[in-house]
Image 1 (cartoon, one colour):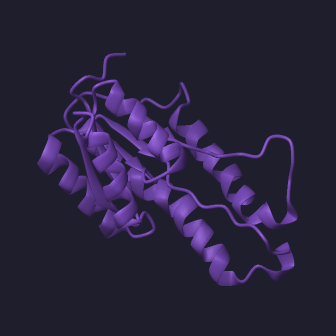
Image 2: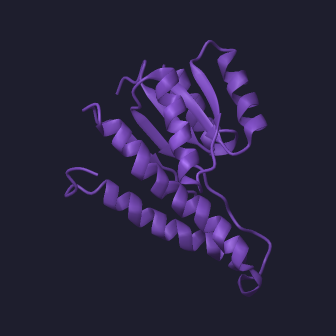
Length: 178
């Protein structure tokens, strides 16, 4: 698939998998909106990529807040036009606590980023992609542990299981539209 000149938004793009996705998209010729809650980090990452003559734009986003997602989308469309690709990559793990000791606020934070971030992306990025009649791609990154499990990671793993079901539903052959 040729994505030259297409516009993509990648959440969690300041580092890790998100930065890797943003870099790959930029190298393939896409305009990339690099979105992350860490404003300084995403600006630095975008600066590093833009030095290679790629069309990238950093934007601060808090995927737990619907208005922040909408603001990032408006900024993307203002700078690059139509949105074609959305990568709902922002995600957070939880380490270091026994499950019975995880405070409710930590559960809320993990759920906010790992579930509401995907929901807000689906509710706003997908319609933006579909409104101009060209369906492209929606990618929800799910980071999983393959060979080991930590009891302290259970909150994040619970979310990943639900995330996988959402992704399966979006990619079901029986779904004709989002």
